Length: 301
Image (cartoon, rainbow, N blue to C red):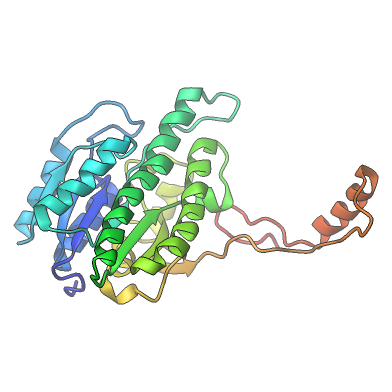
């Protein structure tokens, strides 16, 4: 990969395995210095180990790059702050943040526990916000000091959050929140020279290897984690400054720009609505509105 991120300082959360590991290595090949953040937990968030992050840092070094490890929990406010501060202490600044950390606790809605909900939304949604918050403060300080900032944020959402998926209400809600956060943060941070985008990747990893049709799809398409990273490296590099507030889906060799909520068919009641008139009007509007997409983002025929 061409050195499109030469000298940039890139923080990748959840970088010890799967997609995060692929991102860290891809950025290193592109010339970036990398902060490899990972707790070394199991797919459901249990346990911990320093080895996954250390192994990726060793791989970066073997490529001739520079990397440091970080074991902070991104869902912890102080931990997210320490992560950003470590990057600044080690390399002088932060240029790119890739929010990738996540866990899964899939269950039907009626069987999901409060802990299942809290754990998943904490890592995905709060973790994304916490790291973004502390990085944004860093960029704001640099911009106010007169520096030309080219900050980049690449969040990780999912088609489950964009289009829905049974059995993943906690994960889908968190990922939908990340997509909305991406759009709002892009609007706020543009003034500081920062872009904020998100990717919705499809990849066969330990997170997805036993999920529905993923193994079968991987036999037909390139769903290696490495297939996602070129998109993330470009979005995290200096050449992407004209793209912000977008969600990009990556499915093997196919990329697309997801289109979000839009204001659809409407009706007005000059004298105000009553329950009986709302029902008739709303029924007619739903019939005219485009149907919700399926789990792959396709409109029903």
